Image 1 (cartoon, rainbow over the protein chains, first blue to last red):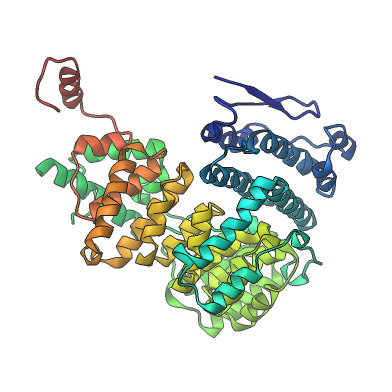
Image 2 (image 1 turned 90 degrees about the horizontal axis):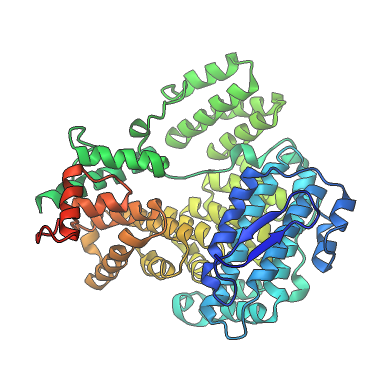
Length: 233
Length: 311
């Protein structure tokens, strides 16, 4: 086992994340990040005041997180601290390692969204603020590091002209390029809530698996058939 | 192809036991021991009657959710839509309002859909997510171009919901952008799931490329997508020989080495659909099933050199 990263400086019980090999061996990062969901399940978020949050290591990201609800902000800050520590690619990082770093960020991002929507299932205003904070933070993580930013932008452009996107129509290509954001665009959408959606909760209708019962039967029949064919082969 | 499990086959029973332990969601409901809900066998008129009689809004929400499934299969008459609007108007709980809104989307109620379509312009991300989900429940192809436009960094916090809706619409027009998300490892699990829902063989190569990346969740999603594509295709022999060769070689690797039983399960299903054959011990090992004692003894004897015959 290798380095131990202790997070949560606000002082209500440390979260210990253990990495077998920290950077530059980025391939081992799945363990600490994979553990976030488990940590969340084991350790419900305690209520915190804004002062509790500010006692943690301040910084530009924390300032953004201050816009988020208090208890959500401290949790997100933990994730950002961990990612900053672990995801800064070494200078010699390959494209694959950069992609891996991006991927890890998006994985935490996905978990963050699910967490915020559940935590604030009955408070749409706070849901909106939490989503703002998540989006802003992830954008900063992705583009705050010049190496990630440069390769991110390159990776968004390259496939359009070659490879799997080479067959895009002109209109599709134009739509794709026009959606490519500049740093100035990195403001996560905000707007007044629509009364039409008042009283609706995503948590009540969030789609789970789209696999149907008949698909489950079909798949299992293939497995039994495979077992049977293997035996007679 | 055989139908469901032969109960007398101990290997099948061991596989069922293993899946119940490691990934019960993969098993059909009857084999997983999941009881159908009280309303599962009701038809639309029975469900409406049950919803009207029920006082508890939580249970009414369950009835309405089952009603949405029935509407998805059979469509909705104007009377059913009127009932849903009335329920929406009177509902006081969040859960009942939400499931009724979902049912209106599934019913493709034009008034409801018109409002939801216009909401795709909102800057409020919570509303945008809800609107995207409703578009997905309605499988509203008219909204596809707008959904594709919305997939940008400015709306990161809604992208997973938008990608899900795109998958539900099921149009191959969305594939270039979904393939690029897959290649860039951005919302790649969601992109793979949407690609599976679309089920176009054009996605096979991008999915195979995606599993070269070390990500267990992506492996599972990509393998499930591959299975759905092959199912949709019906006859896998229509694929080019080179494609079948590439799929087989990737599956051969993942069956033993994928990081999750879910990915290994779908890799086995895909392998079977392509007509492959595997030793039953390998299948069982891939799924975490306990080998029969006789097989374990043979393997032990082989490994300690008491037997020259490989088990």
